[in-house]
Image (cartoon, rainbow, N blue to C red; front, side, top):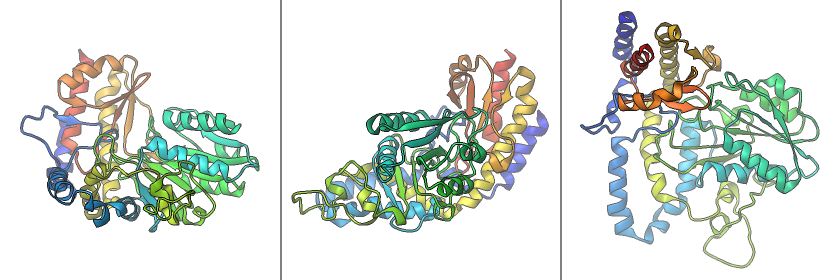
Length: 406
């Protein structure tokens, strides 16, 4: 046990991103000693608190309705472009910020299947996040489509050969998660895209558990459509708006179904009939959540300064350290690792499994240790690289070990 604690101290001392931890807001009376749920909700930045106050006092109170013509109208596109550049590997005018992940999933998936009316099959996997599955079930009911389910191992994730076995000329769309929400499995996006495209199908990816943690190359990988949230590794705050990506080559052929004034080619004309805007703005519908976008300015500044490759390097060190702690401290109590050990296939979190883990949640929280829990028996350990140190991970898992001993 001592060697692993000493290793945490050495890793923290050598951490090139250690300075960023002090940029996160942690009040003096903060009762959390180990926050291991950055893959569900990121911590707030000190800069975010200042930006929110400045926005309310100066932009909102000072400019009032004039704020829209000052800059707010362009925030969904400007912030989308910046997010695409900093974290998604996407050229300009392909990413927008706005709506929730669920709404954007519906918009893009519905647009995709509408664009190929002769293709009646949609491929998805059984262990994808519930929203993805539920949205596609609803679209299938609306459109009379066949859902083709790939059974994926909850301790792993989608494999290219599984996709190749079912995709064909009847397939309109394939939808998977880049990082599996349960296991942390990192999918081979480029290869799965190639398989889908060879069959003439479109590919769509859920980036919720990878954006801001894992390098993403949407343009280079040939992704057609993607969605993701901003409140996990992007520290946008509870309920922060999501983002959508639509490849430029598809923007003239795909038409999202929720037609609103903000996506019109001339929003303030307010004339008869809907005419979609050119480019990514056509993905917008109603008035965008400007207040909810304010935190993204601060986090994108931080992520740009740190660099996504450096973030990924630390993430791999953190999750590797979690695996070592699990093997030495927790395995003797029957705890299993329910996710990939191979760093090439591991996202930003590690899932630990043991029957009865749910009963430990309240004692862990009472002790100031906050992991995530996914039924039936998985604890997700998600250390966010910019806000989490190795000593913090050690404190959290040592507390878990003590509770297991009891």
